[in-house]
Length: 95
Image 1: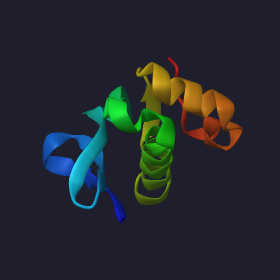
Image 2: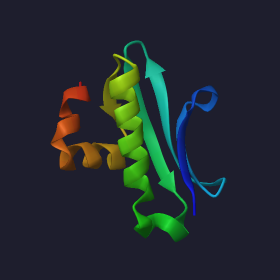
Image 3: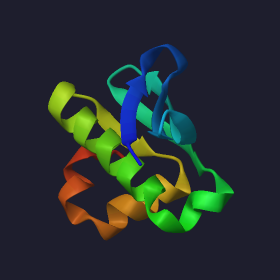
Image 4: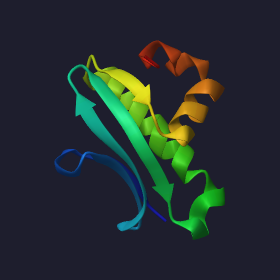
């Protein structure tokens, strides 16, 4: 089974697909120099497979390497992920 994760810039969301079938997404909005993660959702049948964590990790790594944006984790899953992975704290603006 192939997994692909990408930033769908037109829809302001990161997506994760399994064999080209959408399995989850992390929505965001841009506010000046901030990226506000508003919602993360994974297909209920696939929630125990770690897809949400892989998706959020990819999104945060992408923000870190391709922008100077500050992360606002409005989504509780993203906030919890950052709390559990302190190496992402440097990206956060909990304002």
